[in-house]
Length: 113
Image (tube, rainbow, N blue to C red; front, side, top):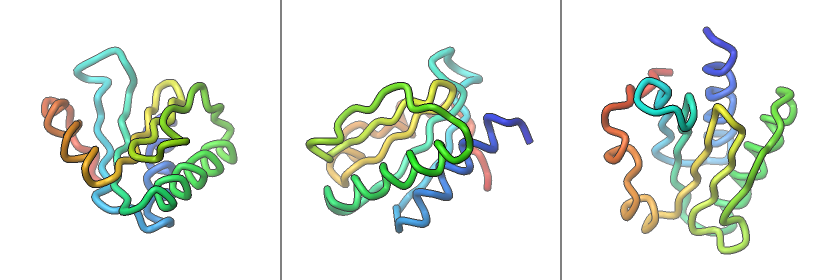
């Protein structure tokens, strides 16, 4: 398993530990140079979205990965955490349905865990 793939799985595990739903890891590096992986999940409330984001930040920091950018934390409808090769998306239910990244990036393989 590549180092980047292992880190994407660490982010997914941190999400699941905070009871995120519909966790997906998309291997987008095959279809775009934007990143290697998108790690996507849903959460029911703003409080849960923030808690999942904090858990992912902590897990990635513990793995030696630096957070490059964070968007949406204050409004907590969609939080994006940019770790460079790995971009984490934490969606509230409406935002997940609206943006539907898994459909937008349908050419990207879903990583089986």
